[in-house]
Length: 269
Image (cartoon, rainbow, N blue to C red; front, side):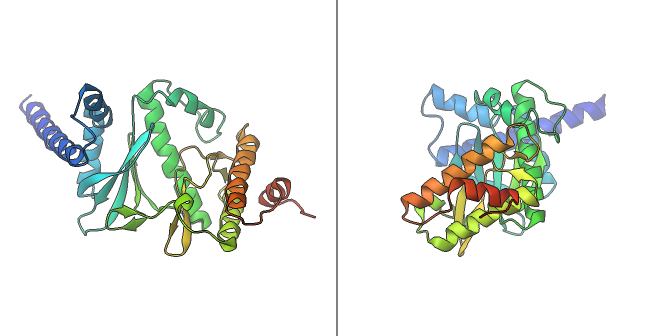
């Protein structure tokens, strides 16, 4: 009993430590504590279980401390983390209470890699984090330029930080682009499909970073196996999004059907 009590006390101290850290982070970024609604946002990100996950990841050496928010969306928030040797990492926390998770089931159900799927919000958040980690790993091993996956636990995934000194690299939509960028991204789509055996399913100018003269594809939570029942539908959408963006920038693109055929490995006339 004494041992259990000491362990509980240690856990509570850890929670208090990370709760204070979380409040400090978000106070500095002016995104919480100004009203009740923003307070709820804070508690949605740093609930008790998430704090314990962060504590375990930190103890395991995945990161030493967190700085501010570098990206915030309906489903996740990404923080700038720093390791003990001062290496920057991206710490992505999937929100447990996100209302979008029911819609996101379409990207999980039918994927042969994920058979057991809990339907509560925490289970979906956790499988989404694990799914992104696995997808990044498959793409990295296939030679696609993506953030290197480092660790995953619960609803948190840690990956390579793409940028300098906490400033993320610009998204493609905010960068100058040229014909070779189109060639690079379409080749990456081909490798993702053929070698990583995935379809990104949410590819656009918003989740491609331009960094040190290369393109880095991010946000692989939606990516599905190319054997997923809706893989073709998602691939068609990715192709349309990419072609539309480059056409608006005045760059000549392959016709959608021809690009789809090339990605699939079919003969293109």
